[in-house]
Length: 355
Image 1 (cartoon, one colour):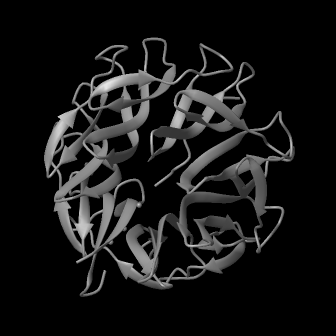
Image 2 (image 1 turned 135 degrees about the vertical axis):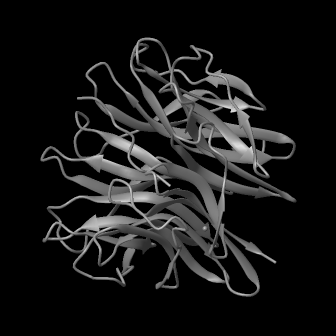
Image 3 (image 1 turned 90 degrees about the vertical axis):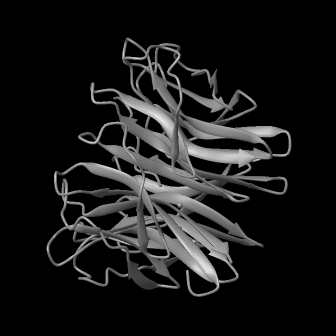
Protein backbone atom coordinates (compact mmCIF):
# COMPACT_ATOMS: atom_id res chain seq x y z
CA UNK A 1 0.00 0.00 0.00
CA UNK A 2 1.47 3.34 -1.03
CA UNK A 3 1.01 6.71 0.62
CA UNK A 4 -0.76 9.68 -0.86
CA UNK A 5 -0.43 13.17 0.55
CA UNK A 6 -3.60 14.19 2.41
CA UNK A 7 -4.69 17.69 1.79
CA UNK A 8 -3.20 19.64 4.14
CA UNK A 9 -3.47 23.43 4.30
CA UNK A 10 -3.33 28.70 6.77
CA UNK A 11 -6.02 33.07 6.95
CA UNK A 12 -5.69 37.19 8.56
CA UNK A 13 -10.20 40.26 9.22
CA UNK A 14 -12.35 43.28 10.39
CA UNK A 15 -11.21 46.88 10.40
CA UNK A 16 -8.39 46.30 12.88
CA UNK A 17 -6.96 43.14 11.35
CA UNK A 18 -5.84 41.75 8.04
CA UNK A 19 -6.89 38.29 6.93
CA UNK A 20 -4.68 36.60 4.33
CA UNK A 21 -6.09 33.41 2.82
CA UNK A 22 -3.83 31.74 0.29
CA UNK A 23 -4.52 29.04 -2.26
CA UNK A 24 -5.65 29.02 -5.86
CA UNK A 25 -8.65 29.79 -8.06
CA UNK A 26 -9.79 28.40 -11.41
CA UNK A 27 -9.87 30.81 -14.36
CA UNK A 28 -12.13 30.70 -17.42
CA UNK A 29 -9.74 28.26 -19.13
CA UNK A 30 -9.82 25.89 -16.15
CA UNK A 31 -6.27 26.78 -15.16
CA UNK A 32 -5.47 26.99 -11.45
CA UNK A 33 -4.18 30.50 -10.70
CA UNK A 34 -2.08 30.76 -7.52
CA UNK A 35 -2.73 33.70 -5.24
CA UNK A 36 -4.21 34.98 -2.03
CA UNK A 37 -7.12 36.99 -0.71
CA UNK A 38 -6.30 39.96 1.51
CA UNK A 39 -9.40 40.95 3.46
CA UNK A 40 -11.49 39.32 0.75
CA UNK A 41 -9.76 40.85 -2.28
CA UNK A 42 -8.04 38.43 -4.64
CA UNK A 43 -4.39 38.94 -5.59
CA UNK A 44 -3.14 36.67 -8.35
CA UNK A 45 0.46 35.44 -8.47
CA UNK A 46 2.05 34.82 -11.86
CA UNK A 47 2.26 31.22 -13.04
CA UNK A 48 5.42 29.90 -14.68
CA UNK A 49 3.32 29.23 -17.76
CA UNK A 50 -0.05 30.93 -18.27
CA UNK A 51 -1.57 27.73 -19.67
CA UNK A 52 -0.60 25.54 -16.69
CA UNK A 53 -1.53 25.32 -13.01
CA UNK A 54 0.08 26.89 -9.96
CA UNK A 55 -0.61 26.38 -6.27
CA UNK A 56 0.04 28.20 -3.01
CA UNK A 57 0.37 25.89 -0.02
CA UNK A 58 1.60 28.32 2.65
CA UNK A 59 1.63 32.06 3.31
CA UNK A 60 3.91 33.89 5.75
CA UNK A 61 4.29 37.55 6.69
CA UNK A 62 7.76 38.48 7.94
CA UNK A 63 8.28 42.15 8.69
CA UNK A 64 7.24 44.05 5.59
CA UNK A 65 7.60 41.01 3.32
CA UNK A 66 4.94 38.57 2.20
CA UNK A 67 5.92 35.05 1.15
CA UNK A 68 3.59 32.65 -0.64
CA UNK A 69 5.12 29.20 -1.18
CA UNK A 70 4.09 26.25 -3.28
CA UNK A 71 4.76 24.98 -6.79
CA UNK A 72 3.87 25.64 -10.41
CA UNK A 73 3.83 23.62 -13.63
CA UNK A 74 6.52 24.64 -16.10
CA UNK A 75 4.58 23.74 -19.25
CA UNK A 76 6.61 20.55 -19.79
CA UNK A 77 4.62 18.52 -17.29
CA UNK A 78 7.03 19.20 -14.41
CA UNK A 79 6.06 20.76 -11.07
CA UNK A 80 8.64 23.31 -9.94
CA UNK A 81 9.00 24.13 -6.25
CA UNK A 82 9.38 27.73 -5.16
CA UNK A 83 7.92 30.79 -3.53
CA UNK A 84 6.74 34.28 -4.36
CA UNK A 85 8.30 37.05 -2.24
CA UNK A 86 6.21 40.19 -2.57
CA UNK A 87 4.89 38.75 -5.81
CA UNK A 88 8.25 37.80 -7.37
CA UNK A 89 8.89 34.11 -8.02
CA UNK A 90 11.99 32.26 -6.79
CA UNK A 91 12.37 28.72 -8.09
CA UNK A 92 14.02 26.02 -5.98
CA UNK A 93 16.24 23.48 -7.72
CA UNK A 94 15.40 19.79 -7.67
CA UNK A 95 18.82 18.25 -6.98
CA UNK A 96 17.66 14.89 -8.35
CA UNK A 97 16.87 16.21 -11.82
CA UNK A 98 15.29 19.23 -13.46
CA UNK A 99 12.82 16.97 -15.27
CA UNK A 100 11.45 15.60 -11.97
CA UNK A 101 8.67 17.09 -9.85
CA UNK A 102 9.32 19.10 -6.69
CA UNK A 103 6.97 20.77 -4.23
CA UNK A 104 6.96 23.19 -1.31
CA UNK A 105 4.31 22.09 1.17
CA UNK A 106 5.39 24.05 4.27
CA UNK A 107 7.25 27.31 4.74
CA UNK A 108 8.63 29.55 7.46
CA UNK A 109 11.02 32.44 7.96
CA UNK A 110 13.30 32.68 10.99
CA UNK A 111 15.46 35.78 11.27
CA UNK A 112 17.24 36.13 7.94
CA UNK A 113 16.76 32.47 7.00
CA UNK A 114 14.11 31.10 4.65
CA UNK A 115 12.98 27.49 5.12
CA UNK A 116 10.94 25.89 2.32
CA UNK A 117 10.08 22.29 3.16
CA UNK A 118 8.55 19.68 0.92
CA UNK A 119 9.55 16.97 -1.48
CA UNK A 120 11.60 16.35 -4.60
CA UNK A 121 11.14 13.32 -6.82
CA UNK A 122 14.00 11.44 -8.41
CA UNK A 123 14.13 9.64 -11.74
CA UNK A 124 12.64 6.47 -10.20
CA UNK A 125 9.57 8.35 -8.96
CA UNK A 126 10.53 8.23 -5.29
CA UNK A 127 9.57 11.39 -3.39
CA UNK A 128 12.48 12.51 -1.21
CA UNK A 129 11.54 14.60 1.83
CA UNK A 130 13.65 17.60 2.71
CA UNK A 131 13.90 21.35 2.88
CA UNK A 132 15.62 24.20 1.15
CA UNK A 133 17.34 26.60 3.55
CA UNK A 134 18.07 29.83 1.71
CA UNK A 135 17.81 27.88 -1.52
CA UNK A 136 20.09 24.97 -0.55
CA UNK A 137 18.54 21.49 -0.43
CA UNK A 138 18.81 19.30 2.68
CA UNK A 139 17.50 15.75 2.28
CA UNK A 140 15.71 14.07 5.19
CA UNK A 141 16.38 10.36 5.26
CA UNK A 142 13.58 7.80 5.13
CA UNK A 143 14.60 5.75 8.18
CA UNK A 144 12.64 2.69 7.04
CA UNK A 145 13.35 2.27 3.35
CA UNK A 146 15.95 4.16 1.35
CA UNK A 147 13.98 3.49 -1.82
CA UNK A 148 10.68 4.52 -0.20
CA UNK A 149 8.99 7.88 -0.41
CA UNK A 150 8.63 10.35 2.45
CA UNK A 151 6.45 13.42 2.70
CA UNK A 152 6.58 16.75 4.54
CA UNK A 153 3.51 18.55 5.88
CA UNK A 154 4.95 21.07 8.39
CA UNK A 155 8.09 22.99 9.29
CA UNK A 156 8.80 24.78 12.57
CA UNK A 157 11.98 26.54 13.69
CA UNK A 158 12.22 26.81 17.48
CA UNK A 159 15.41 28.32 18.84
CA UNK A 160 18.28 26.42 17.26
CA UNK A 161 16.11 23.44 16.34
CA UNK A 162 14.48 22.65 13.01
CA UNK A 163 11.41 20.39 13.13
CA UNK A 164 10.06 18.89 9.90
CA UNK A 165 6.92 16.76 10.28
CA UNK A 166 5.20 14.32 7.97
CA UNK A 167 5.27 10.60 7.22
CA UNK A 168 7.34 7.99 5.44
CA UNK A 169 6.76 4.68 3.65
CA UNK A 170 8.23 1.64 5.34
CA UNK A 171 9.43 -1.45 3.46
CA UNK A 172 5.83 -2.77 3.34
CA UNK A 173 4.43 0.47 1.96
CA UNK A 174 2.84 1.45 5.29
CA UNK A 175 2.89 5.15 6.15
CA UNK A 176 4.67 5.89 9.43
CA UNK A 177 3.92 9.18 11.19
CA UNK A 178 6.66 11.25 12.75
CA UNK A 179 9.01 14.18 12.49
CA UNK A 180 12.66 14.98 11.94
CA UNK A 181 14.33 17.12 14.60
CA UNK A 182 17.56 18.51 13.19
CA UNK A 183 17.53 15.71 10.65
CA UNK A 184 16.89 12.83 13.10
CA UNK A 185 13.63 10.94 12.64
CA UNK A 186 11.27 10.32 15.56
CA UNK A 187 8.39 7.92 14.89
CA UNK A 188 4.97 8.57 16.39
CA UNK A 189 3.29 5.22 16.90
CA UNK A 190 -0.06 4.15 15.56
CA UNK A 191 -1.75 3.08 18.79
CA UNK A 192 -4.45 1.10 16.98
CA UNK A 193 -2.46 -1.08 14.60
CA UNK A 194 1.20 -0.63 13.69
CA UNK A 195 0.57 -2.35 10.35
CA UNK A 196 -1.80 0.46 9.34
CA UNK A 197 -1.10 3.96 8.05
CA UNK A 198 -0.53 6.98 10.26
CA UNK A 199 0.19 10.59 9.30
CA UNK A 200 1.27 13.86 10.81
CA UNK A 201 -0.61 16.62 8.99
CA UNK A 202 -0.08 19.54 11.39
CA UNK A 203 2.69 20.38 13.83
CA UNK A 204 3.73 23.07 16.28
CA UNK A 205 6.05 23.66 19.22
CA UNK A 206 5.00 25.63 22.28
CA UNK A 207 7.61 26.13 24.97
CA UNK A 208 9.09 22.71 25.70
CA UNK A 209 6.09 20.85 24.27
CA UNK A 210 5.90 19.28 20.83
CA UNK A 211 2.45 18.83 19.28
CA UNK A 212 1.91 16.64 16.20
CA UNK A 213 -1.65 16.22 14.96
CA UNK A 214 -2.93 13.93 12.27
CA UNK A 215 -4.57 10.57 11.89
CA UNK A 216 -4.03 6.88 12.50
CA UNK A 217 -5.94 4.10 10.76
CA UNK A 218 -7.27 1.09 12.59
CA UNK A 219 -7.55 -2.46 11.26
CA UNK A 220 -10.97 -1.71 9.74
CA UNK A 221 -9.55 1.14 7.67
CA UNK A 222 -11.13 3.97 9.70
CA UNK A 223 -8.86 7.00 10.09
CA UNK A 224 -8.99 8.23 13.67
CA UNK A 225 -8.03 11.87 14.27
CA UNK A 226 -5.77 12.76 17.14
CA UNK A 227 -2.74 14.57 18.48
CA UNK A 228 0.57 13.37 19.88
CA UNK A 229 1.84 15.68 22.63
CA UNK A 230 5.46 14.87 23.37
CA UNK A 231 4.84 11.48 21.79
CA UNK A 232 1.67 10.60 23.72
CA UNK A 233 -1.45 10.09 21.63
CA UNK A 234 -4.83 11.71 22.44
CA UNK A 235 -7.76 10.66 20.30
CA UNK A 236 -10.07 13.31 18.84
CA UNK A 237 -13.38 11.55 18.49
CA UNK A 238 -15.80 11.67 15.60
CA UNK A 239 -18.92 12.84 17.43
CA UNK A 240 -21.19 11.96 14.49
CA UNK A 241 -20.29 8.32 13.90
CA UNK A 242 -17.40 6.48 15.54
CA UNK A 243 -17.32 4.02 12.63
CA UNK A 244 -16.44 6.83 10.19
CA UNK A 245 -13.14 8.61 9.61
CA UNK A 246 -12.11 12.04 10.86
CA UNK A 247 -9.11 14.13 9.86
CA UNK A 248 -6.95 16.92 11.27
CA UNK A 249 -5.57 19.47 8.81
CA UNK A 250 -4.26 22.29 11.00
CA UNK A 251 -3.18 22.99 14.58
CA UNK A 252 -2.93 26.09 16.76
CA UNK A 253 -2.01 26.73 20.40
CA UNK A 254 -3.37 29.73 22.30
CA UNK A 255 -2.16 29.96 25.89
CA UNK A 256 -3.20 26.59 27.38
CA UNK A 257 -5.73 25.70 24.69
CA UNK A 258 -5.17 23.33 21.77
CA UNK A 259 -7.16 23.87 18.56
CA UNK A 260 -7.17 21.17 15.88
CA UNK A 261 -9.12 21.91 12.69
CA UNK A 262 -10.34 19.43 10.13
CA UNK A 263 -13.44 17.49 9.28
CA UNK A 264 -15.41 14.40 10.26
CA UNK A 265 -17.58 12.11 8.18
CA UNK A 266 -21.12 11.67 9.48
CA UNK A 267 -23.47 8.70 9.14
CA UNK A 268 -24.71 10.07 5.78
CA UNK A 269 -21.12 10.13 4.48
CA UNK A 270 -21.11 13.94 4.47
CA UNK A 271 -17.86 15.67 5.47
CA UNK A 272 -18.54 18.15 8.26
CA UNK A 273 -16.05 20.94 8.91
CA UNK A 274 -15.05 21.91 12.42
CA UNK A 275 -12.38 21.96 15.08
CA UNK A 276 -11.59 20.34 18.37
CA UNK A 277 -10.72 22.69 21.26
CA UNK A 278 -9.04 20.68 23.99
CA UNK A 279 -10.74 17.62 22.56
CA UNK A 280 -14.27 19.05 22.31
CA UNK A 281 -15.72 19.31 18.81
CA UNK A 282 -17.22 22.55 17.41
CA UNK A 283 -19.01 22.22 14.10
CA UNK A 284 -18.49 24.84 11.39
CA UNK A 285 -21.69 24.77 9.41
CA UNK A 286 -21.98 24.78 5.66
CA UNK A 287 -23.99 27.99 5.29
CA UNK A 288 -25.08 27.02 1.76
CA UNK A 289 -26.58 23.67 2.65
CA UNK A 290 -25.92 21.66 5.82
CA UNK A 291 -26.58 18.43 3.91
CA UNK A 292 -23.48 19.08 1.76
CA UNK A 293 -19.80 18.66 2.58
CA UNK A 294 -17.42 21.27 3.93
CA UNK A 295 -13.79 21.10 5.08
CA UNK A 296 -11.67 23.20 7.41
CA UNK A 297 -8.11 23.33 6.09
CA UNK A 298 -6.46 25.87 8.39
CA UNK A 299 -6.94 27.41 11.82
CA UNK A 300 -5.72 30.51 13.65
CA UNK A 301 -6.64 31.17 17.28
CA UNK A 302 -6.01 34.63 18.69
CA UNK A 303 -7.52 37.17 21.06
CA UNK A 304 -9.52 38.37 18.04
CA UNK A 305 -11.27 35.03 17.69
CA UNK A 306 -11.02 31.65 16.02
CA UNK A 307 -10.47 31.76 12.26
CA UNK A 308 -10.74 28.61 10.15
CA UNK A 309 -10.09 28.60 6.41
CA UNK A 310 -11.68 26.05 4.15
CA UNK A 311 -14.15 25.19 1.44
CA UNK A 312 -17.87 24.43 1.37
CA UNK A 313 -20.07 22.90 -1.30
CA UNK A 314 -22.55 25.50 -2.54
CA UNK A 315 -25.97 25.31 -4.25
CA UNK A 316 -24.29 24.75 -7.63
CA UNK A 317 -22.39 21.76 -6.21
CA UNK A 318 -19.13 23.67 -6.54
CA UNK A 319 -16.72 24.08 -3.62
CA UNK A 320 -16.46 27.75 -2.65
CA UNK A 321 -13.44 29.07 -0.75
CA UNK A 322 -13.78 31.05 2.46
CA UNK A 323 -13.20 31.15 6.18
CA UNK A 324 -15.20 30.98 9.35
CA UNK A 325 -14.59 33.64 11.99
CA UNK A 326 -16.07 32.51 15.30
CA UNK A 327 -18.34 30.19 13.35
CA UNK A 328 -19.57 32.75 10.78
CA UNK A 329 -18.76 31.94 7.16
CA UNK A 330 -17.09 34.55 4.94
CA UNK A 331 -16.96 33.57 1.28
CA UNK A 332 -13.84 34.44 -0.71
CA UNK A 333 -15.01 35.10 -4.27
CA UNK A 334 -13.46 33.60 -7.36
CA UNK A 335 -12.72 36.63 -9.55
CA UNK A 336 -12.80 34.38 -12.62
CA UNK A 337 -16.28 32.96 -11.89
CA UNK A 338 -15.85 29.36 -12.97
CA UNK A 339 -14.90 25.99 -11.52
CA UNK A 340 -12.33 23.28 -12.07
CA UNK A 341 -12.70 19.72 -10.86
CA UNK A 342 -15.69 20.80 -8.76
CA UNK A 343 -13.85 23.69 -7.06
CA UNK A 344 -14.31 27.39 -7.71
CA UNK A 345 -11.33 28.12 -5.50
CA UNK A 346 -9.40 26.60 -2.63
CA UNK A 347 -7.91 27.93 0.62
CA UNK A 348 -4.77 26.15 1.77
CA UNK A 349 -3.25 28.58 4.25
CA UNK A 350 -4.48 31.33 6.52
CA UNK A 351 -2.90 33.98 8.74
CA UNK A 352 -4.28 36.88 10.78
CA UNK A 353 -2.22 40.04 11.17
CA UNK A 354 -3.03 42.99 13.41
CA UNK A 355 -2.90 46.38 11.70
